[in-house]
Image 1 (tube, one colour):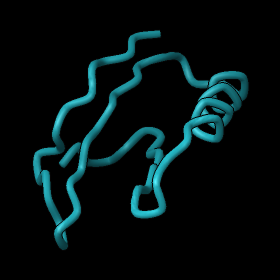
Image 2: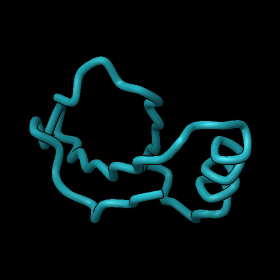
Image 3: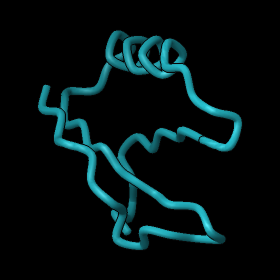
Image 4: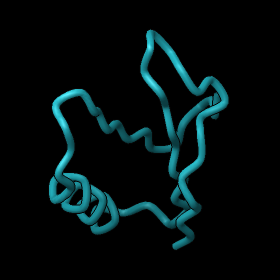
Length: 61
């Protein structure tokens, strides 16, 4: 598994919201999906912050 450092998205701001991306490269399986879900659920985020996960994105923009 390779986890790359957070970086601004190519379109780094939409509707006054900043966007960041973290790229994770790995062999996809249920165990990896479960670990990602557990990690996201354990993060304390503010009310105006959202996290989304795109598995095998068609477009990296």
